[in-house]
Image (cartoon, rainbow, N blue to C red; front, side, top):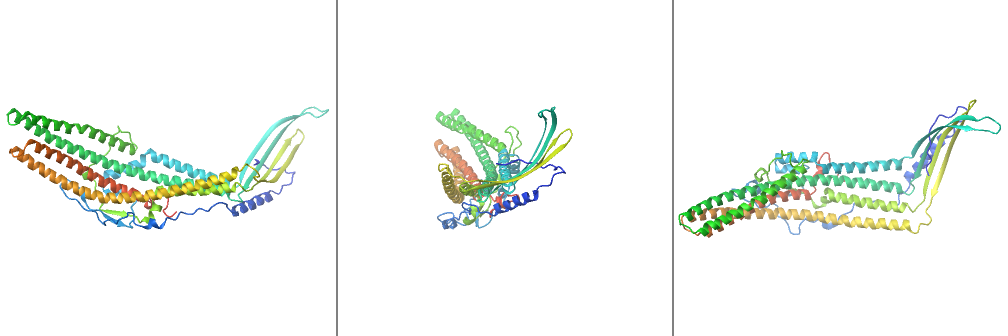
Length: 511
């Protein structure tokens, strides 16, 4: 139990109590507490198994992906070199060499409310730690002042009214002999670390969402433009077919078939337009804007540059670079500290209290002053609680085991992300080359079939097949181009995003 006390000037007629002895006693107690042991496990960063040092994928990857060439491939067809052991830059999105993308990401980092919420949560966790540190390392001191007017009626005398004033300073400190308070402080520090890495993960997630959404917009815009071009060509062909039907050169079934193809292609436009509009809305919200504000840049696949060099961190460094792994490690640290808290609660607790103050009674004819001081100590030892404290310790140990398993799961998932991304990078390059070849051949076939049809060399059904094949190949090429950009961004995110190289990084890879 803590006693509140206040400092007030003592009455000159009273001797000063040994206040220095009170302060010295509390200082000695504080030193003993800080030098005391801390029960429970001392946390150490988990050591990854030897398998974590192996390559990310079971079968070796080529040092460079294949390249693709073609009139419509553009910069997305370059070969990409994997540079093992090279660090990822903090502003990795600049590797796409798109100024509009860079400006949009900077706007999102400045105005996105999700980041504001994460930063506020981080400040809250840090201040909770600061508050606990103040009560753990320093004794609490409180000032209490009082005053009042009283009436006393003594036997055989007239009533006397007088004033009473008091002032007291109280100092209280709980000895942390077994480290329970320090373990609790360690737990709060781990909670702040967790929130710090969660904030960094929120940054990287936002950047990745902006990049992939911009790529999605560029892909949808490309598909929409390709579909409109195809529709325009098909409508031209429809007018030719209708003219031929009027002249009796073709049966009406030819015009009806072509009209059906035109209607089918036209029906593809509204879903693409809707998806493009929704993607633009998402970009606006990511940038902290309302969808109706406008002012967002338009993205095209031709305006992006595919990074030709891909820095790939060593597997041994991944666990220190992924924010989600570091956050999971912080939760494991917090669970470890809570085991210490639960263990310390089974041991005695000693509290020291010191107080010093004065009380003045002001009578009409005199001023009576009293000086009061005291030093007390109290010990609390749990004797019987139905096994509650032991059960809480076992529960804390189980919580630690749960956090440890979750940490391992997070590490495994992180390595899977990198392995999947590396395989996707290789497969995307092969797919783009195949799609570029298919699109070129389909376009050439359509040109040949169109000329032959005009000369009467092939049937109309053969021309329709050529049109459908080219349409599918063109859309497939655009999707393959977008996949290379998206999966490259996914690889950078899987590797941690390079946040540790930023001057204002919220954490350190070695800490």
